[in-house]
Image (cartoon, rainbow, N blue to C red; front, side, top):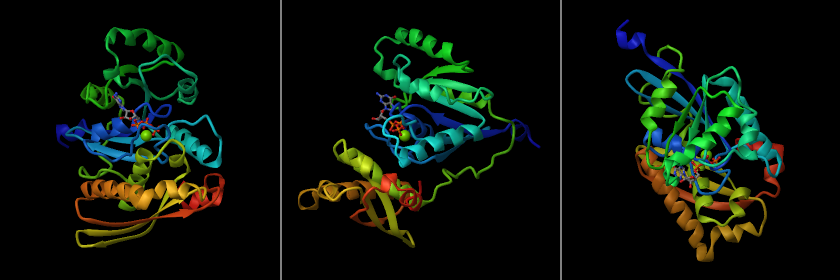
Length: 297
Ligand SMILES: Nc1nc2c(ncn2[C@@H]2O[C@H](COP(=O)(O)OP(=O)(O)OP(=O)(O)O)[C@@H](O)[C@H]2O)c(=O)[nH]1
Ligand SMILES: [Mg+2]
């Protein structure tokens, strides 16, 4: 066994926090590519997602999670919260991500879920929003009093600030063991899943406030011919009235959404994508256990 192998560390790291604090953005910046979908709207992430980052001496297995929900307790949100609590039982280290603001109820709800027997790091994201960095101190104290954090690391995911320091801090809490995944592996999710997520991201980014929460994506066909992928996908909406909002005047909206999703897919998959998208109405899918299951929740 060489020295490098002897000291190799590998372990799982949960990324948790209230919605919209930048969990998925952080994961993407660590990986150096866009794997997890992000948007300005809260509740973008709906599935757990493994992002694998391998360096010379460490394999980090990051688990991105949905922001913990407190409003509208429908079946979908219950399933999102279950995902978060489940992930917390399975990991070696927890990253609790906050914005540089005082401890609020939404943060407190997530804090209450953190296991006491695992190292948790307080990650203060969006540091770039703070003019004067000195202001971070009092709010860090707020959080530190409520939970025995192993370390506190301020970062800016968007500006790539302090990310290396964060990785170094995480490493010291990972178990010494060989890598679990091959070093070029990026995630445990397949292209079908990633394609559906990229479509959902564009719906979050290009639609007004209400519609995205009523949308799910179904991949009906995914065929690979050499370097070309042929994808047939459907947006599922909750009500008839949402269909025209998604399609837009003369189909413009849907075209914009599918063009941008296709471009991201081509980057992520490294090949041409032929994408066809339509819209279906399934009333009440977000509160229907069977519909949720068939949509992968
Ligand atoms: N200014 C600034 N904005 C950031 C930073 N990191 C993330 N954001 C923005 O915060 C918003 C939410 O980011 P996401 O990564 O989708 O947040 P999330 O925590 O994954 O959200 P959910 O999946 O909904 O729980 C996006 O508009 C990001 O661009 C940062 O370091 N600085
Ligand atoms: Mg997210």
